[in-house]
Image 1 (cartoon, rainbow, N blue to C red):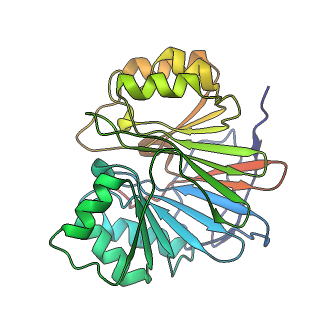
Image 2: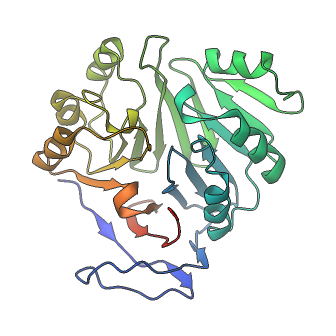
Length: 283
């Protein structure tokens, strides 16, 4: 049985609310993750639409996964400022649906991005698109690519397909922790996943904003994650059966529309979780 550790981070102008107390939105001005040089954290941002996740490393490097939905740049800017992310070294794009060109260009200019990582199809679009990205290193990840992205952080592309509903599915392993960014929903992708050993996945980023049939009961049982992260998209209503499947499997679900921004801090042994809800996020 995997064990969940909850904790309180060090905040400026933020007051702790006991776990059993009613949730009250609190305006947070800044967050200090207090990361040691050998620690890492992941933050799953709560946006009005779309996906964006930040990897923070104790050596002060930041990596962004996807760019958020169209028009969410002001929200993303507030959240990046909240976490003190003034520079971003790399942006990883996992799916055409999960990025938009306007946000990508803005992020590159605003945060000094030097590298963009994407699958072959998406990388080709970036290289030959209307936007001049000649100053950016566009790095291609293909299926089974393995790379140490940051000290102690190993990445592996488990699937990268071109069928409808496919994207680039990436596993991140840090110490004994494994986070799986699942994006593909095709039958071919599911067959590949079921043949892989995913039993040590602690945290699962759910695919396709929880659309109907985006993930099966067999897949959930195959991975048996402890935590599932579900992002919100304004045009997508999550499948109501999905929450039941995850609940029956004893998986804790964090839905960004409901629970807010989720930060998970990893040490060599444990991981710790906290959620932040910003009162003005959807205004």
